[in-house]
Image 1: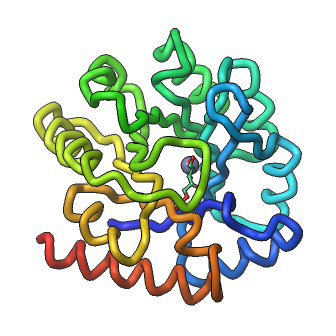
Image 2: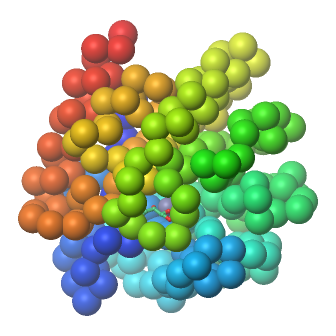
Length: 224
Ligand code: DX5
Ligand code: ZN
């Protein structure tokens, strides 16, 4: 099953509630929240207070993508603010097993993220712990970047490993997902599609979400 996770990074922050509602009406299943600390990635975004406000305007799960150093320090605050899913970067976390269990201890789904330069093999020891794996298809830090096609093989590999090892994690993709790239990521095995610019960049988020989801669902049907 394919789900769309609009990223609020490209939304108009002065009208966040309205924009999230529109994305929900367009079929969004999850709201993707990009948290950046100016250290792990060269940009700053938002923290738990924004998650707390979002919690009041939507019932959709809030998927908090932590692009931060020392995520253990902030996981409890994000969970208390209303995060439902929390993901951390393999590259930012020295004690990955411990951090993933910390997320789960707060009753959130736990995800692990890999940058374009990080191989899937680095996750072999945590694939039985995580609820989802997020494959970055751009280098994290900014919205509206160009999709990196060489990341597609990692989605395929994760789907292969999941069936070989009889695991249950879901596969999420983030970066440059747009009408031109959506069929490729779905065919490669991505099931949760993050899209910022393609939903909120221009035009109507409701219609943009609908169109992207329609293209994704068509590609999924062709795959079978
Ligand atoms: C990038 C963020 C993404 C970003 C995706 O660092 O993690 O979630 O918002 O944006 P688009 O869809 O515009 O590439
Ligand atoms: Zn993200």
